[in-house]
Image 1 (cartoon, rainbow, N blue to C red):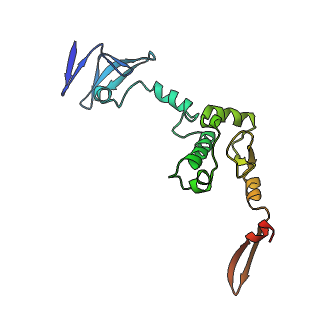
Image 2 (cartoon, helix red, strand yellow):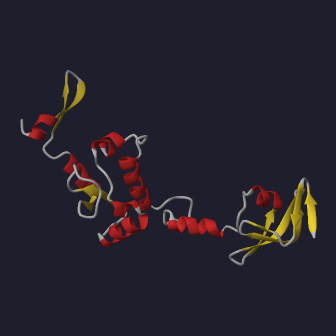
Image 3 (cartoon, rainbow, N blue to C red):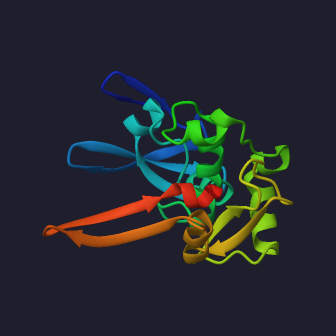
Amino acid sequence: MFVKNRDYKIHFGEKYNKLLVLSLGEIRKRRKYFLCKCDCGRIVEIRIDHVLSGNSKCCGCSRNERKIIHGDSMSNKHARLYRIWNGILQRCTNPNNPSFNRYGGRGVGVCEQWKNYVAFKKWALESNYRDYLTIDRIDNDSGYSPNNCRWITRRENTMRAHRGIKHSKGEFNGKRFEHVDRNRAIGS
């Protein structure tokens, strides 16, 4: 049996992506809804034009699977650890990333193992990752890898980046100034 809906012919028992059309459901706001069974076993009412256009491919179960695999998040926001990993990859491999010149552009790369998020996450958790820590490369001229990275606080990271640099703040003729003597960092 089929139902004609505008220009669509919908056959009961026909499968669209993960949805099997079972029967006609309610009509709400002049829209036809159909009762569909998803591959996961859940029965849902979905607008048939969404099913036919591909906007609805399942009951929503794939969305949850994808988020768990891809970002460890059940909300629309990626987990912090995933964002850190993605930022590393972008800085090192994407020439369109604003930071590429300071990373990938000067030869800083990512080890093969860490190109997989699950492997990076495993290392991070085994290395005492916490949400208040940032990733740090021990040798700034080497890439991101388990033997060259560690987790440190933002304060430690700032102090590490500015060690040996003399900062001067003051006021002269009523104007504030800040001077950074970078020559001190290289021993001049």
